[in-house]
Length: 226
Image 1: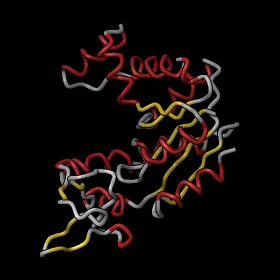
Image 2 (image 1 turned 135 degrees about the horizontal axis):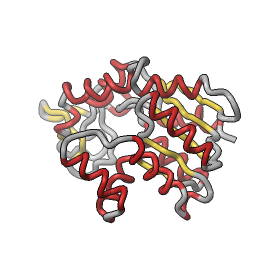
Image 3 (image 1 turned 90 degrees about the horizontal axis):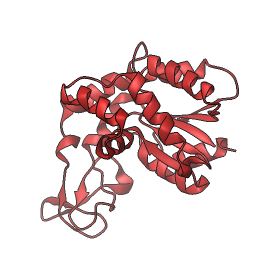
Image 4 (image 1 turned 90 degrees about the vertical axis):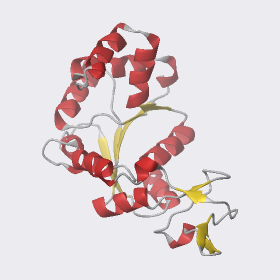
Protein backbone atom coordinates (compact mmCIF):
# COMPACT_ATOMS: atom_id res chain seq x y z
CA UNK A 1 0.00 0.00 0.00
CA UNK A 2 1.55 3.29 -1.16
CA UNK A 3 0.15 6.57 0.16
CA UNK A 4 0.64 10.33 -0.04
CA UNK A 5 -0.70 12.32 2.92
CA UNK A 6 -1.58 16.02 2.89
CA UNK A 7 -2.67 18.38 5.64
CA UNK A 8 -1.77 21.86 6.87
CA UNK A 9 0.45 22.44 9.89
CA UNK A 10 -1.83 21.87 12.87
CA UNK A 11 -3.97 19.20 11.21
CA UNK A 12 -2.41 16.23 13.02
CA UNK A 13 -0.93 14.85 9.80
CA UNK A 14 2.16 13.48 11.52
CA UNK A 15 0.07 11.78 14.21
CA UNK A 16 -2.19 10.14 11.65
CA UNK A 17 0.81 9.09 9.58
CA UNK A 18 2.33 7.31 12.58
CA UNK A 19 -0.97 5.51 13.25
CA UNK A 20 -1.25 4.38 9.63
CA UNK A 21 2.37 3.22 9.66
CA UNK A 22 1.74 1.05 12.71
CA UNK A 23 -1.62 -0.26 11.49
CA UNK A 24 -0.41 -1.40 8.06
CA UNK A 25 3.29 -1.98 8.80
CA UNK A 26 4.48 0.44 6.13
CA UNK A 27 7.31 2.97 6.14
CA UNK A 28 6.45 6.55 7.15
CA UNK A 29 8.72 8.68 4.96
CA UNK A 30 9.12 12.36 5.85
CA UNK A 31 10.63 14.45 3.07
CA UNK A 32 12.85 16.48 5.39
CA UNK A 33 14.42 13.27 6.71
CA UNK A 34 15.34 12.28 3.14
CA UNK A 35 17.35 15.48 2.75
CA UNK A 36 19.09 14.96 6.10
CA UNK A 37 19.88 11.34 5.21
CA UNK A 38 21.43 12.23 1.85
CA UNK A 39 23.33 15.28 3.07
CA UNK A 40 24.55 13.55 6.23
CA UNK A 41 25.51 10.44 4.26
CA UNK A 42 27.41 12.43 1.67
CA UNK A 43 25.55 10.96 -1.32
CA UNK A 44 26.02 12.58 -4.72
CA UNK A 45 22.45 13.88 -4.61
CA UNK A 46 23.03 15.08 -1.06
CA UNK A 47 26.13 17.02 -2.09
CA UNK A 48 24.21 18.69 -4.92
CA UNK A 49 21.31 19.52 -2.60
CA UNK A 50 23.66 21.00 0.01
CA UNK A 51 25.09 23.44 -2.55
CA UNK A 52 21.62 24.91 -3.08
CA UNK A 53 20.73 24.89 0.63
CA UNK A 54 24.01 26.61 1.56
CA UNK A 55 23.15 29.39 -0.89
CA UNK A 56 19.69 29.70 0.58
CA UNK A 57 18.07 28.43 -2.62
CA UNK A 58 15.35 25.82 -3.07
CA UNK A 59 16.61 22.40 -4.12
CA UNK A 60 15.43 21.71 -7.69
CA UNK A 61 12.92 18.93 -8.28
CA UNK A 62 15.37 17.06 -10.51
CA UNK A 63 17.47 16.49 -7.38
CA UNK A 64 14.68 16.12 -4.83
CA UNK A 65 12.56 13.57 -6.69
CA UNK A 66 15.44 11.13 -7.41
CA UNK A 67 16.23 11.29 -3.68
CA UNK A 68 12.63 10.39 -2.89
CA UNK A 69 12.52 7.57 -5.42
CA UNK A 70 15.78 6.12 -4.03
CA UNK A 71 14.25 6.17 -0.54
CA UNK A 72 11.05 4.48 -1.70
CA UNK A 73 13.11 1.64 -3.18
CA UNK A 74 14.76 0.78 0.15
CA UNK A 75 13.98 -2.52 1.87
CA UNK A 76 11.69 -1.07 4.53
CA UNK A 77 9.37 0.22 1.80
CA UNK A 78 8.78 -3.18 0.19
CA UNK A 79 5.52 -3.60 2.11
CA UNK A 80 4.44 -0.06 1.21
CA UNK A 81 5.12 3.53 2.16
CA UNK A 82 3.45 6.72 3.30
CA UNK A 83 5.12 9.88 1.96
CA UNK A 84 4.67 13.00 4.08
CA UNK A 85 5.76 16.54 3.17
CA UNK A 86 6.07 16.22 -0.59
CA UNK A 87 4.86 17.37 -3.09
CA UNK A 88 4.31 20.97 -1.98
CA UNK A 89 3.03 22.41 -5.25
CA UNK A 90 1.34 21.40 -8.50
CA UNK A 91 4.53 21.15 -10.57
CA UNK A 92 6.06 18.79 -8.01
CA UNK A 93 2.83 16.73 -7.99
CA UNK A 94 2.92 16.37 -11.76
CA UNK A 95 6.62 15.48 -11.78
CA UNK A 96 6.30 12.98 -8.91
CA UNK A 97 3.28 11.27 -10.50
CA UNK A 98 5.19 10.80 -13.76
CA UNK A 99 8.31 9.58 -11.95
CA UNK A 100 6.31 6.99 -10.00
CA UNK A 101 4.67 5.84 -13.22
CA UNK A 102 8.06 5.54 -14.95
CA UNK A 103 9.31 3.42 -12.04
CA UNK A 104 6.15 1.25 -12.09
CA UNK A 105 5.37 2.34 -8.52
CA UNK A 106 1.62 2.38 -7.97
CA UNK A 107 0.17 5.19 -5.88
CA UNK A 108 -2.80 3.61 -4.13
CA UNK A 109 -4.15 6.44 -1.98
CA UNK A 110 -3.90 10.17 -1.45
CA UNK A 111 -5.12 11.25 2.00
CA UNK A 112 -6.17 14.85 2.51
CA UNK A 113 -6.88 16.07 6.05
CA UNK A 114 -9.22 19.03 5.57
CA UNK A 115 -9.03 21.79 8.17
CA UNK A 116 -10.02 25.47 7.94
CA UNK A 117 -7.05 27.80 8.14
CA UNK A 118 -8.18 29.60 11.31
CA UNK A 119 -8.63 26.31 13.18
CA UNK A 120 -5.26 25.02 11.97
CA UNK A 121 -3.57 28.14 13.31
CA UNK A 122 -5.37 27.94 16.65
CA UNK A 123 -4.32 24.33 17.05
CA UNK A 124 -0.69 25.39 16.71
CA UNK A 125 -0.75 28.49 18.91
CA UNK A 126 -2.90 26.87 21.60
CA UNK A 127 -0.63 23.90 22.28
CA UNK A 128 0.98 23.74 25.72
CA UNK A 129 3.86 21.49 26.79
CA UNK A 130 4.07 19.80 30.18
CA UNK A 131 7.46 20.00 31.89
CA UNK A 132 7.08 16.38 33.06
CA UNK A 133 5.86 14.75 29.86
CA UNK A 134 5.36 16.36 26.44
CA UNK A 135 2.87 13.60 25.62
CA UNK A 136 0.41 14.91 28.20
CA UNK A 137 -2.20 16.61 25.97
CA UNK A 138 -2.90 20.21 26.90
CA UNK A 139 -4.56 22.77 24.65
CA UNK A 140 -6.21 26.04 25.64
CA UNK A 141 -8.77 25.88 22.83
CA UNK A 142 -10.26 22.42 23.43
CA UNK A 143 -12.35 21.72 26.51
CA UNK A 144 -11.54 18.00 26.52
CA UNK A 145 -7.81 18.64 26.99
CA UNK A 146 -7.82 22.16 28.45
CA UNK A 147 -5.23 22.79 31.19
CA UNK A 148 -6.51 23.28 34.72
CA UNK A 149 -6.03 26.41 36.78
CA UNK A 150 -4.06 26.30 40.03
CA UNK A 151 -3.04 29.33 42.08
CA UNK A 152 -3.95 31.59 39.18
CA UNK A 153 -1.88 29.69 36.63
CA UNK A 154 -2.69 27.04 34.05
CA UNK A 155 -1.03 23.70 34.77
CA UNK A 156 -1.03 20.27 33.13
CA UNK A 157 -4.44 18.63 33.25
CA UNK A 158 -2.79 15.21 33.71
CA UNK A 159 -0.11 15.72 36.35
CA UNK A 160 -0.28 19.35 37.44
CA UNK A 161 3.13 20.12 35.95
CA UNK A 162 4.22 23.53 34.76
CA UNK A 163 3.29 24.37 31.16
CA UNK A 164 5.22 26.17 28.46
CA UNK A 165 4.92 26.97 24.77
CA UNK A 166 7.26 26.18 21.89
CA UNK A 167 8.73 29.33 20.38
CA UNK A 168 7.83 28.27 16.85
CA UNK A 169 4.23 27.65 17.93
CA UNK A 170 3.93 31.34 18.80
CA UNK A 171 5.66 32.71 15.70
CA UNK A 172 2.54 33.81 13.85
CA UNK A 173 4.48 35.16 10.88
CA UNK A 174 6.14 31.78 10.33
CA UNK A 175 2.83 29.95 10.77
CA UNK A 176 1.13 32.27 8.28
CA UNK A 177 3.96 31.76 5.77
CA UNK A 178 3.64 27.97 5.93
CA UNK A 179 -0.14 28.21 5.65
CA UNK A 180 0.13 30.64 2.72
CA UNK A 181 1.98 27.93 0.83
CA UNK A 182 -0.36 25.12 1.85
CA UNK A 183 -3.72 26.79 1.20
CA UNK A 184 -2.71 28.31 -2.18
CA UNK A 185 -4.95 26.58 -4.75
CA UNK A 186 -3.13 28.10 -7.72
CA UNK A 187 0.49 27.14 -7.17
CA UNK A 188 0.73 25.83 -3.60
CA UNK A 189 0.08 22.54 -1.85
CA UNK A 190 -3.69 22.67 -2.36
CA UNK A 191 -3.00 22.86 -6.08
CA UNK A 192 -1.07 19.59 -5.70
CA UNK A 193 -3.98 18.01 -3.82
CA UNK A 194 -6.40 19.11 -6.53
CA UNK A 195 -4.09 17.71 -9.20
CA UNK A 196 -4.42 14.24 -7.68
CA UNK A 197 -8.18 14.67 -7.29
CA UNK A 198 -8.40 15.25 -11.04
CA UNK A 199 -5.81 12.66 -12.00
CA UNK A 200 -8.17 9.72 -12.34
CA UNK A 201 -6.89 6.19 -12.74
CA UNK A 202 -6.52 3.74 -9.87
CA UNK A 203 -5.39 6.26 -7.25
CA UNK A 204 -8.12 6.89 -4.68
CA UNK A 205 -8.27 10.30 -2.98
CA UNK A 206 -9.58 10.27 0.60
CA UNK A 207 -10.64 13.62 2.07
CA UNK A 208 -11.47 13.59 5.79
CA UNK A 209 -12.63 16.28 8.19
CA UNK A 210 -9.68 17.09 10.44
CA UNK A 211 -11.67 19.09 12.99
CA UNK A 212 -12.62 16.06 15.09
CA UNK A 213 -10.62 14.20 17.71
CA UNK A 214 -7.56 12.14 16.82
CA UNK A 215 -9.65 8.97 17.08
CA UNK A 216 -12.43 10.34 14.91
CA UNK A 217 -10.00 11.37 12.18
CA UNK A 218 -8.26 7.98 12.38
CA UNK A 219 -11.57 6.12 12.08
CA UNK A 220 -12.54 8.19 9.03
CA UNK A 221 -9.23 7.40 7.32
CA UNK A 222 -9.14 3.70 8.17
CA UNK A 223 -12.70 3.27 6.93
CA UNK A 224 -11.48 4.19 3.43
CA UNK A 225 -8.20 2.26 3.41
CA UNK A 226 -8.63 -1.29 2.19
